[in-house]
Image (cartoon, rainbow, N blue to C red; front, side, top):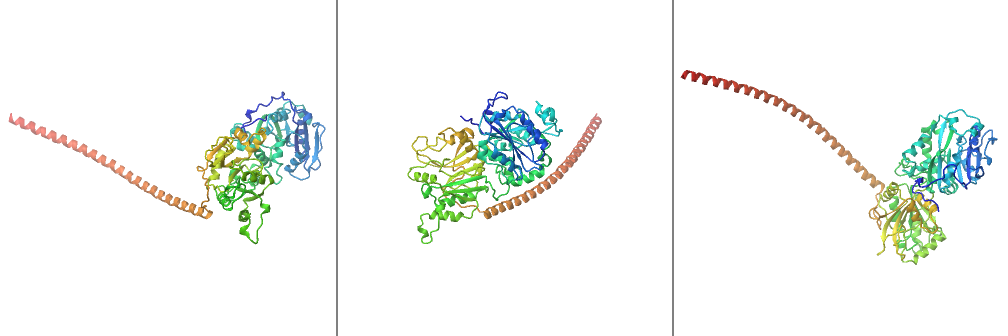
Length: 592
């Protein structure tokens, strides 16, 4: 049974200790190279003495158009091949090596990186524990003089040859501040660096090859696609390697970021800070909304008014980074010239015509399986919640991180999609199901939205699905197991109600951009007015404080004057009392 890892918490696995692994998986080490034969010789010398069995290891060196051509040195692994990729670029070279590889695991290795002799074994012990891992070793960057290949092959500890060296500071910091990539699984894919990373070959096949359209950032972009294919990313400190000299990023980080960010923003929706524009579209959308047929159109059929209500609300929401998919028999839809109002496919004609030039809406042809599913649904008394099974709806491109399945006629509020996404992202859920409507007597007792009684009664639901969660579920699920149950085990499933998140079963007025602009302008004007009023009040407060200060000073002076007067009065009283006493004494004396 395939191990189930929750999120990116690979700590639930127990890989074999170094030296105790009984290996069975083949590994292909792909080494793209351009020039610098001396460093390539050292990289191959490091591979020649690996503790992982040579019989299970192949090394593919890809000469990316070097002049003079590269050669294989005498000191290299026994199963080493040299192929040529004349198209310039590391992505092209890696893809050429990937096409030639036959291993169960692909180990990327730069031609200027020397592996510790236990490094490949340290990687492979993890791949024997689970078939959907991406393992990255720890690189150190050395300025040391280059030794001879024989010295590298004979060294038990490469630190004796290459220290002092600098760590890969950014990756070390990422691992430390995310508790080994387990505390923030959404950024774990950044650990995919081509210098010393290994990937399950089946996982690579699902994610696809390197993107050759990118100038820089190919490693990160592939890491992102691997994450969407269900990967778990593992940092392996026991896999140590030395990079011969500094990396290009260490030398020129700012200009490299400037170039790579310009391209990866189009391809990695998770980098939200690179998508700050409030309205533009991107190559890979953040979320795909699959509008599913039903409602008044009947099971498996679209009704124009319901589709328009749903699609327009989605496109007018606060998440502009969205694509909408409509699946149907669009290939048979034509324009009836003589009696258009009697066209049995009139609703389909209207839908396609209305959104034909909206780039965010795509029309996907209906398959035979989809049509058969729709016909079966017509005879059913009730319909289950939308499911991720053949014939229900098309899966998105693997790189789209979220998919919302939404029945036509149900209308999200302006901020509904954003709130659902916030819930899924913040809490890490693999599936957020929204209870839209419920049959009388039906209850939600299971993840798939059925009543759990076997009666076939169910609910109408919307489903926000995380692509990575369902890809992982497809890998780890047992035969006959519902994918939702596997998603619940690995990412978590939650049900929420429609009203709380702003869904309604009918169309409502949309806030257009100009209306929103006017509202925002009015709000900004009100804020400015209140700011001026606040400033006026602050000035008045300052004035009152000054006046109060003057009053306090006057009070002090008055108190001083009162004090003086009191003293004078007391003195006068004493004089009067003394004079009166003297007069009394004189009068008594005269009487005597």
